[in-house]
Length: 231
Image (tube, rainbow, N blue to C red; front, side, top):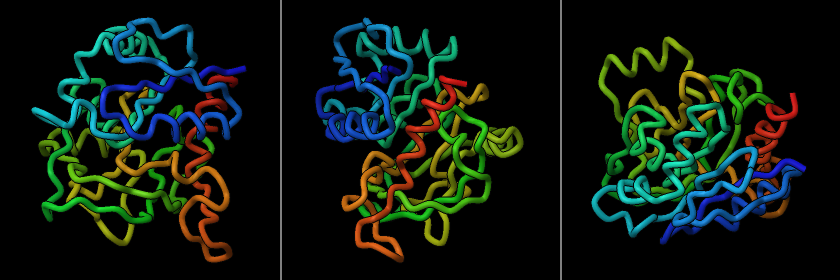
């Protein structure tokens, strides 16, 4: 069975939800502790959401120096699939595994809502089961989710197809060009601010037209990783 590691830092909140999502997708979740540099032979890694180290200094800035990250950076650069969700996305940017940065929401408030996204790139390890242009709904909750980059980097991300998910209808945090998630050039590393692990099980996901809390669009993000590993 495919083994997907889920890293826990001090202040991580959604590691158990991420582990449940991995299990729902058909893989075995493996708990990884931030002080342990050993990835224990996992096939992919998820950096879950939360407030690592209380978001002191900057979101993800301290977690980036945890022992597990040295190994993760090396393996990610060799092609290990890595998904960073919310605080995990911030950590990936701080670790220079993804370009750009996340700053305080432009309205200076924490926001929590079901958010519509458009899939812009289905050629990554974490999006290959979607179709380009497909619209999905994923819960979002952040206070520092505004993605920023300089004009040159934004042009490169757009030109090289590294924008994976984009906000639709409403930009919840002021992210430039409505960017909700990006990948590295190789496509094995993806970071996004919305929380797909909260949309993997009927009865516990976003509202749908046919069912209360029936949305499970997030499940395919985790299933995509399994698909890429088995292909």
